Length: 428
Ligand SMILES: *Cc1c(COP(=O)(O)O)cnc(C)c1O
Image (cartoon, rainbow, N blue to C red; front, side):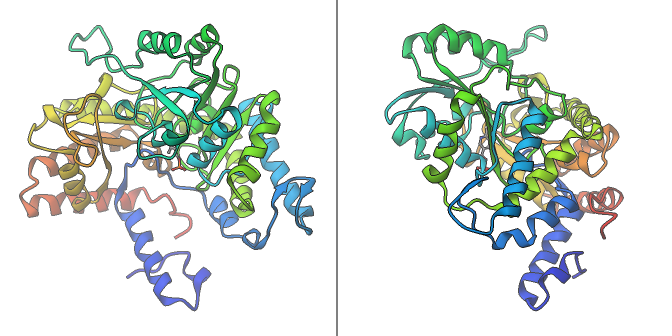
């Protein structure tokens, strides 16, 4: 097995070295199309692997429960300053260990147990932490779900977009304390003005969960909800291309409550190595080249959608305004499930995830759709031509899925493509 640039970091442990080498090979020799993934920069990874992992720093800058936090305070302050500047927010909390933790902390800060929350239904694109029966959120708070409009076969009408009338009707009927906007499998713009209007009509607080498009917003390629929302949560590792983690932005009036809900409400000691890496990512995202990247991500996703449609796949809502696409496999082959497609594509070196489409007749474990995204391979330098080629490779592998030679041939073409677009070429 070829060695990875990280081998020297773990000298003395052959087993972990060998596993990291294999994962390095996988990430750089197969296509990463999972919409929630990206390739972090070497600088982000260096900070994540830094000496800061040794430090305990419960509390916040200037108010720690442990000594020795002079440098850590400066790091966390730097991350907070960079983040509020990036999005134009009053206050930032960079401690959430993940997007899920950020969301639960927000609920804890703004709600009492049993309060009603209006959020997007999971089977229409919402996230587990938006009140799924499988999530603890649904056991503490009462979630009501809005959905998307029906599928449209009229080319002049875009279907499968957030149903604002349904949202408004539910808001007036249920009088939620909080409305959550944001999704995990939704390819269209989410307009913050409309959500603010509905929230104001019923006196609800408004939270935006921009886990997916945070990077696109930072780059100016998607609308920024910060001026409209009371609170905004996101992950730092999806389109924002930072380390694995979460963050919260809020209006000054909620700052104290949000901070106490994260610590000590939800978490113990913050991961200051991850916070340093977040600071690095926020600086990268503020650079003018990041906007070029985020515009390219959307251009590539649209080219990908167009090419997949030409191969007979139906793109949910007919297209995309962000980095992801929800692909309905039914028009391509109604016997092909999302689960089977994901497995065939894995064999072909194309990494995706199965996903329910709105009103899916199959279970979340099987599904009739795939979710794919352009964020990671755009970081690796791919352009529309490559996404058009990938669409062809996907169609070929899925069409000839029972022919091992055909799938192996696609696997070879994928490897050749990846060799030309190695995200860590300068590093290898
Ligand atoms: C990914 C995601 C999260 C959760 O992020 P984790 O870091 O995986 O906990 C929350 N909300 C939405 C909408 C997401 O897409």
